[in-house]
Image 1 (cartoon, rainbow, N blue to C red):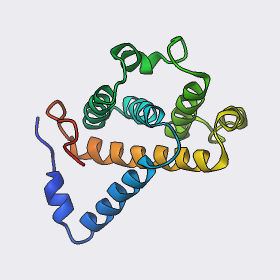
Image 2 (image 1 turned 30 degrees about the vertical axis):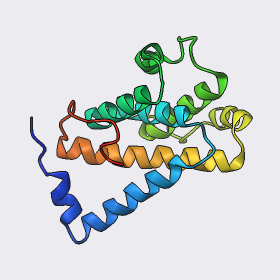
Image 3 (image 1 turned 135 degrees about the horizontal axis):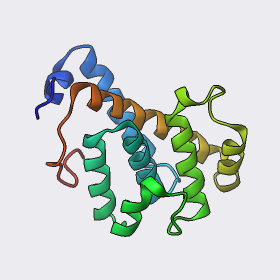
Image 4 (image 1 turned 90 degrees about the vertical axis):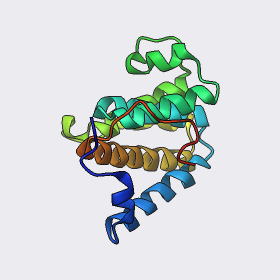
Length: 160
């Protein structure tokens, strides 16, 4: 499988490249939030599973494993509701990620109870960071799925 467009071609485009560089910068900025790094990776993995983004799954599962995430937790992200290996805070973030990713499935957007549950575990700054993180990973997922970005060859740290 090969990509419809090469990522370097997109980055080299005067308009699309500039936009993509801002998206990359946004992702790097969010990494510095007070939301635990493990939670951030779990959120990115769950959204990428829902969106069927192999490129992002390749990247974020490898980055999470390199940062010490266990194989058990990584393999259970897709079934987090039934898994006992996630904290209540992580579960709230995963639920927010799911609801924020599946907007078209819910007539009213993210339900109030999902937001209230997340607000029990995260302060306003962290909630803002989670919302932005969910938006950014969904944007990357859509880009990769549209261009059919192949997966499997990602190396930890490859993209900074």
